[in-house]
Figure 1 (cartoon, rainbow, N blue to C red):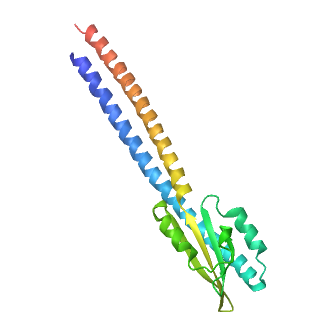
Figure 2: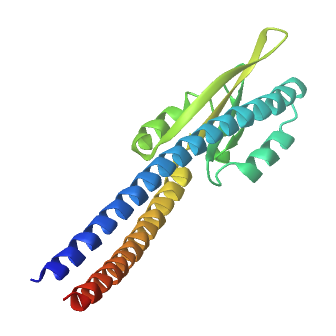
Figure 3: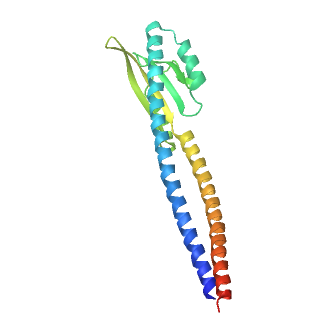
Length: 194
């Protein structure tokens, strides 16, 4: 291998290494930040959902009109992040729910079985007592699932890896081009020298 070919290889490897390292650092840093920001946003949305459902449920328990709560649950529960919801009265009887089969049953922690069943699937129940004037009137239990979020994160990671591969390929081409340009000038100088 001639000295120029060796120099060309070293230049290409140096450019490739630096470009790849920079791209990987940026992708890793940004990926971690995006995931964390998304999880924080989901936690805020969970709290807002629970507060909204709590107020709607409290009004339903006071008036004993559950059709509005049930309509809300039908529309929003079971599609994505919000998986299940149970509204129980003071007697522990489910008065509004998704799944609807739970309505009319004693809420012997209806969600405990589902919790065990989906423990590995990143689902969790959040339960809170409902009160009016400091007096308990019932309980709201909501099951959230991180499955849709984790699926989206997985897609983004795969796309990021594909992008990293494309950046790596571009870096290789630019490294080879830079090496060829530098060494061609050196080769012309070497031929022109006496």
